[in-house]
Amino acid sequence: MEETDRAIVAALTADGRMSYTDLAEKVGLSVSAVHQRVRRLEQRGIVTGYAAKVDYEAIGLPLTALVAIRPFDPAQPDDAPERLSHLAQIDSCWSVAGEDFYLLLVRVGSPAELEKLLAEIRSAANVITRTTVVLSTPFEQRPPAVS
Image 1: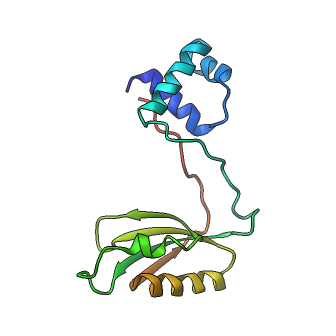
Image 2: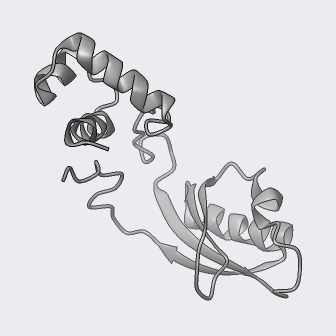
């Protein structure tokens, strides 16, 4: 991917609602050239969508935690994502290397809700959990470095 496309991706990551006019000005191309490049980036699967950034505290979900899970029995089927997909409090599920099998990003309203969710996760997926509560988020979802 060339430098101009990287700059477009970085700008859209920072502000997915940026107009083609503003984007063209930012990367030094014409509006039509930027429009074509964005369309190509979408067609190539580099830009996969656009989303709103949400203030989770403002919508009543101030507690964020990372929950590492691993099965009681490593020989059991690796189906935890399917078993947990019905739990709306799980924002993200990543397959990871190391001691744990998956890492979950969860968002809930209180410590009591977290405790209840952890019990649901353990029961639904037959797993052991290890939880880290997020105290603050200095940054997340940063635009990719343009190099």
